[in-house]
Every structure is written in C-alpha cells, then in structure tokens.
Image 1 (cartoon, one colour):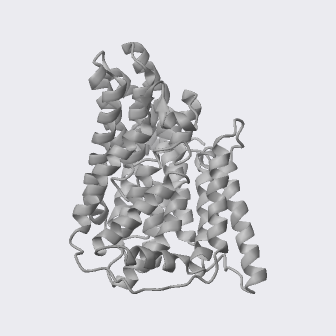
Image 2 (cartoon, one colour):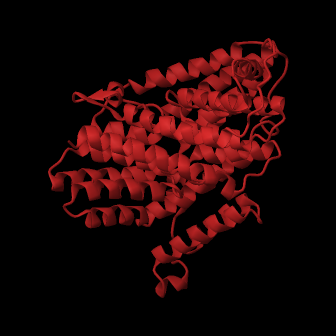
Image 3 (cartoon, one colour):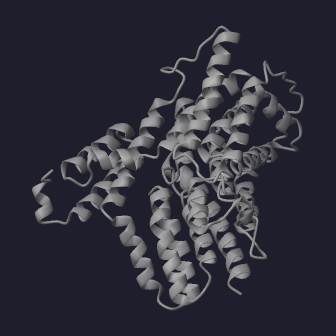
Length: 431
C-alpha cells in the first residue's frame, strides 16, 4: 500500500504513535464505544500503511484468546455448579470481617495464577468475588480490581504463570525449578513473593474501611463438582505442558479449549441444557482484546518497541545499578500501556547485551526485566489482558470502572511490588 501522503511530511512512526495515543485517550474517556474507537484506530493504521493484514493477523496472541474462550466456558459452568457460592460462603464464614474476606479472595486469585494463565485465573475467581460482593451488598469494583492485580502479580512467580515468564525461560534456558532456586541463589519466585507481601498490605489499606463483620451463617451445597474437576484438570494439564521440551505453538490455548469442549458436552448431555455461545460468552471483551493486540502489534511492526529498548541500552552506560534501575523502570512504564509479550521479546536481547557490556551476569537483568514488564501492566486498566477481562466482567454486571478507580489502586500496588521485588533480585544476585 502506498500509504497516506502525510507520511511524506511526518514520519510513519510519528503518525503511528499519535494514532496509538489518541486511541487510548478516547478509550479512557469512555464517551465513545471502546470497540468503535479501537477498530477506527486500526482502520487509520491500515490506511497509512503502518501495518498490513498479514502483520495484524500475526500480532494477535491466539494463546491468550484461546485461554479466554476456553476458560470463559468453564467459568460459566463453574457458576452454574454453585461451587463459587460454596467457596464464597467458606471464605465469609472463616473471615473476621469483610476486609479479611476480600483479602482472602485476592490471595486465592494469586495462588491460582501461579499455576495457570492470568486471564484464566480472573475468569475462575471472579464469580466467587462477585458472589461475596452480592451477599454483603457492596460494590464489587474494588474487589475485582484486587483480584486482577493479584493475578497479574503472582503470574510472574513461576514458569507457567504468564506468557513473558515462558518466553524468558526459553530464551535463558531455564526450567520450572529455576524460578525457585538457581545457581545456589533464590529465584524470582521469592522476589515476587516479597513484592506480594508489600502489595497485599496496600490492598489491606484500601479494604480496611470494610469493617463490618462478615456473615458466618451461610451453608451452601454445590449442585455438582464436575466443572471444578474440569478446571482442575485444565490447570494440571497446563503444569504438565510446561515440562515438555518441544511445545506446540498454540498448546496452551488448545488445552483450555479441549477441556471447555468436554464441559459443553457434559452440560448438554447430562443436564439437558446447552450454553448459548452468543448470549453467555463475552464477545465484546474478546474483540476488544483482538483490537488491543493489533494496536500494540503496529508499534512492534514499526520498530517503536525496539527503539525504546535500544534507547535503554544507550542510556545505561557503564553504571550497573543505573542500567538495572533503567531496565526495570522503563519496563514498568511501557508495560502500563502496551502488551508485555512483544516488549519482553524485544528487551531480552537488550538486557543480555547490557549485562555483557558491563561484565555481569545476565540473570539479574532478565529477572528485573520480567518483574518490571509483568507488573507494570497493573498500573492501568489496559496494561494487561486480565485487566481488560476484569473490566468486561464488571461491565456485564452493570458496573463501570473509571480510569482513576483502577489507577489509584494500581499505582501503589505496582510500585510497592516492583521496588521490593527488584531490590530482592539486586541484593541476592548483584553482590
């Protein structure tokens, strides 16, 4: 495509950045339908030749979309089984007050996210959180934000918790155990857990105003445990998959869709009901995710993400501490607005080169990169796929989340976790 003539006067990269920023601003204002805004922005990017149809297609993360669809089906069955109601009653019955119940749900989200994809975790835990909020008759927005933040945080702790973790493990030759203990030193798992301690204290500060005593007289018996067994089978399959050496490209998505298929068949033949793929599934969020992937993919196609990475390498100089802080800090900032997968892929070679030039181990730089990249997405509602899914769930329930509602929790949560986690890596790996 010849492209738009304006590119003769203004560089294509500049126009791309302008369209990207304008699109995000319009999304945040919420005055226009977000899907219309996203795909209008994509249309302009096609018009000026910033990205082709083929490049747009390959910029979509089909693993995330597959996980989203598969887990959304199982999540719907999970709600139908009333196991979320049962778990909500258990959490409430064993919590001293509402704030402790909220923290209990966030801890559950973090635990599950250590072993399965963040989007899947949100879809599993959200029904439990919503049920608790309905029982207490309280706005679920702060709780659901806490669930999403906790999921994104703990997904960094293990090899299978998040896509950037898998990418880093493959590029650095790490296995599942290396995330816990590597080269006679504590791995990134313990750095994330230290950050989690501080981050959960931040959540407690936000939740402590809910001082009412939690209800303790709920007794709910689930209709069936089959959806729970299917979800458990999916998680175990993902754990087993992480140990395979030659993994299929879309294996993670395939696993989630496989167990979802069995869930649909079970539900249809044993309960004489069927899931309405049109009514029950959140296609709005699905296509919004597609649009965000293409928007961010355009930055990657135009080399803008690589430019950011190269600039970090130039500014780093020969100061090891400054280089480390720069990699972590810029990763947090960039990941607050763009998908962390292409950024991680662009930055891993930079982190390796910087460490080589400075004559130090590459691992602390790679670990710092992972912490900054994964946790930075917690700053904004669109910085991580699980945040987008959370907003979709709340929208479906009739709740709108303002940017400031997310930002005021995301900023202190993220900065606390990043500072503690990055400091841990520096202390144990750079001494």
